[in-house]
Amino acid sequence: HMLGLAAAGSAWKLLCLWYAPQGSAADRYGAELEFFARTIGPDSARFGALTYQELFERLCRGIGGDGHGEWMSYMRTRYF
Image (cartoon, rainbow, N blue to C red; front, top):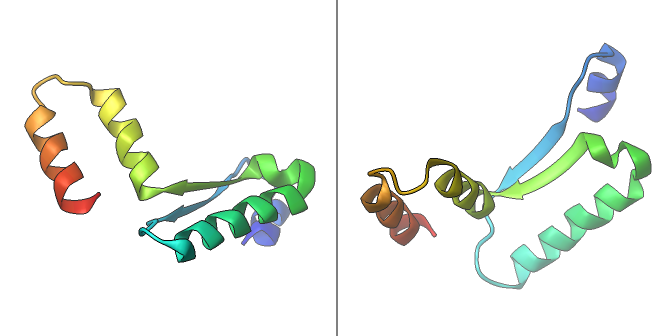
């Protein structure tokens, strides 16, 4: 995907959005993503990895407690 996006010449960033379950498989996958980002070097600014857990926490910080506390608690309990 990165080669195709680079050939297009427009601004882009490739993001690997993934769910990190508990355990060593998630740890290994996270390490592989970090290794990949380091391996591609300066172009790593065009690649990012984010877990659904990290995305959810960012969303919670962004919307704050403005009447969404119950929803955030429900989602955190159900999925994370």
